[in-house]
Structures are given as structure tokens and as C-alpha cells.
Image: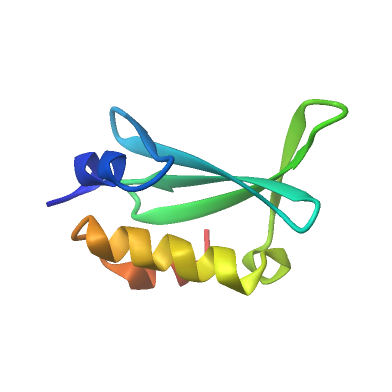
Length: 87
């Protein structure tokens, strides 16, 4: 199990050593990326009007989204604790 198994989780796309999923909720849009070589998760807030994204600190990310990411990592056989690692 590993990064390729994230593709089995709802909405995830895997590209080489990285995986991405998009999330919409409560008026916010996020792009979430997992990087296998560094075992890090990066959150991006997406501005729909400008079609731009900026990285955001995980404390600015809704708790339910963070929990979903941890669950997806675990179901792919990855350590869910990597979601909380700092860059």
C-alpha cells in the first residue's frame, strides 16, 4: 500500500510521487497535495474568481477536511500523522 492507493480514495489523483484532491465546503475551496518523498501534506486555498491558489497554514483548514485527509492517508496505508507535519 502507498501513494498509488490514494487514487482509490474519493477524488484523489496520483501523479508520479505526488497526489492531489480538491475540496469545496462552507464557501471555501481547497486543493490538498501529498508528497511521498518528503511525506508532507500541503494545503492550498483556491480563489475561484481569480483561479489562483495560495498555500495556507493547516490551522486555517477546517477540521473535517483535515480529518478526511488523515482517513484517506490511513486507508491508503500511509501514516496519517504526516498530515500534521510542518514544512
